[in-house]
View: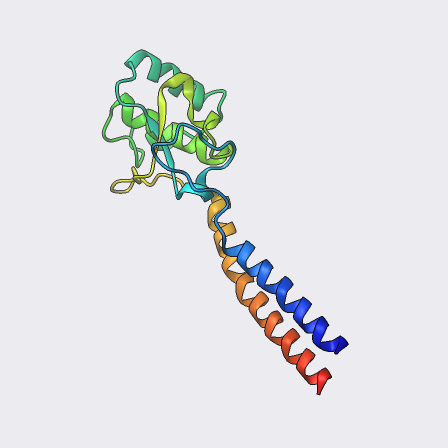
Length: 168
């Protein structure tokens, strides 16, 4: 009787863990005005930071200068003969620099502000040989989560099998 109680308790704990692990943390609806803080990549899919349509050329140039200067973005690919130089527009160059800064500095709204000249998008802005970065943490975290799930299932199966073997 004591072993059966232990097995029942173990099974309930395991079911609780599995249901918690598969439940989404937060659902973000586009019409919602409340945005989460921190890394939004995992909550709402992959995002890129690009120049906001309608931002003035002067504001974009100031933000681009900051990103390539103090922001420490490698802007060599948007210089002449770089993979992302064409089209040679301030919007295109600013979009690349904004995204590079955003992807390396936390994927949050603050890292995609640039004085109000930037906006998040779910549409990959990459084109031709010009590839816009995606957060390295997203790729490694997705890989590690998929690797761990089968381990838990194996451990659960082994635990249940051992419990039944002990009981008989």
